[in-house]
Length: 279
View (tube, rainbow, N blue to C red):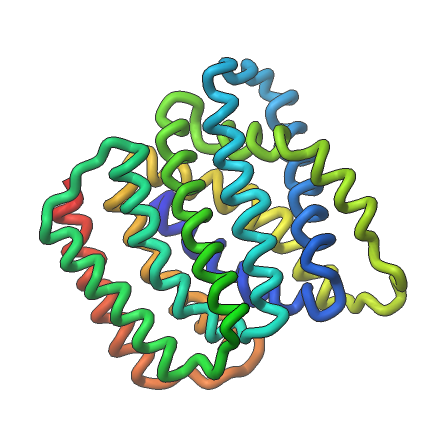
């Protein structure tokens, strides 16, 4: 349930980012969301008197910060300046494979061969659906999304591995605190030139990705990965594009086709198969 809660929260990230970059620069959006989340994370760490991580954990925390605090937010924000959030679903469908791959490389997991079959089928279903409904993209936008998926998969797997010892919310909070100094400098250097030109929707998007996408979602997500296994729980990400489209339909009044329901059912079956053979 923790992993699924994280996926639902993350589903609003790309639509919120798309709205925010309409009025805010990708660099300011990335750094500001990291600063806001870091302050909240520091309050949690201080209030609950959490012990500082060991020096040996700093490298892992740096990898997590580079992947999910800086890399994925910045790369997706840059990509969403040139492609639609719907088109970006193509690449989110590949995130479970990236997470599972780094889970094997960094987490020592060894899924059964049938896991890769179900995982590949689920990713293909998501990508195929998005390609038929997502609109046109650009070469630069697609390359940025591919890079974003790789660094995010690494950050997810590394965070899950460390969460087994430190706890999920502690890991993302320490990673945010570690990234706070440079992110604060960057946010101050990239402040909007005209504050009056930034609409309420952009601020709402910033608020969502700062509080939910950058902190609360990871509290659930890392705990789910640590408890259920990186490869197994990571397959729940296959549902993220469909939750995102559902949110788009409810909030942006975009049509939800019957094909979405059919493909979603197929993805659910693939997720169930992948989880069964993940270990």
